[in-house]
Image 1 (cartoon, rainbow, N blue to C red):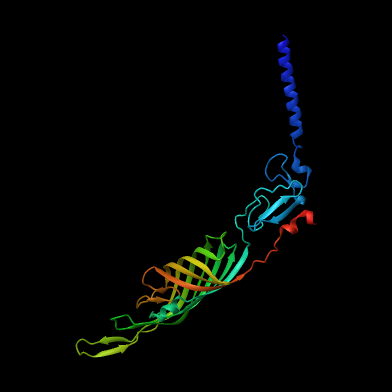
Image 2 (cartoon, one colour):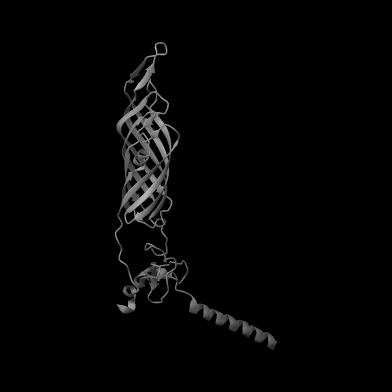
Length: 301
């Protein structure tokens, strides 16, 4: 009987000690409502008073938020771009990130090496979040080509073309000096074309005559699917390569045949073409002040 009473006393004593210990560590109910803070870590008693937070910049350039009372670093705030507390943004760069103007020098270079068509193109871009890039392209094209072993010259006068579309940058949260993009372009051109210096030989009399066919006018709408790479080469100057997969959506029907060369589209030979451009980029991002550890240390204030 005495042993039973001793056993019961031990159980009672253990229960009381456990209850006292629990009261010492039990947090205040709904602690995040009792102070000006939020429960960042979703744990009772782990609320953060934002008025007691300071930010410091570590040796890697990251912003770290520190509780001045406990000295505790706030979880999930070590992120580039001054991310909101406890959150890592999907896009680190601001909406209006940059704007660029470019010149396509592919056709001028190819004409030096004997290409008989194409002229020059220009582009303007607005970079949103370094991710979505609306693009407008304009240019001039012409052709004066005499195919080998043929008896005519295909001629297109200097004619404008227009393209509008958008690029998507897959490296939007990476170093903005590099871009890998995919995009779409809707293009249009209206131009005149003609077969000139057509040599017609009379097989019976053996006489030859040179004639020009009538000038024809065509309007062509086409679609490009682009894949490109761009790299910075010096300060605001960058260069980029593009591969274009193209198809004609609509063109004016002509009784004497379809045009061989289309400004902005190129020759009708094949579905793949390319471009090489030089760009000048204007940054639209305002520089943020750098917060040093001395500036953020409450003991130095």
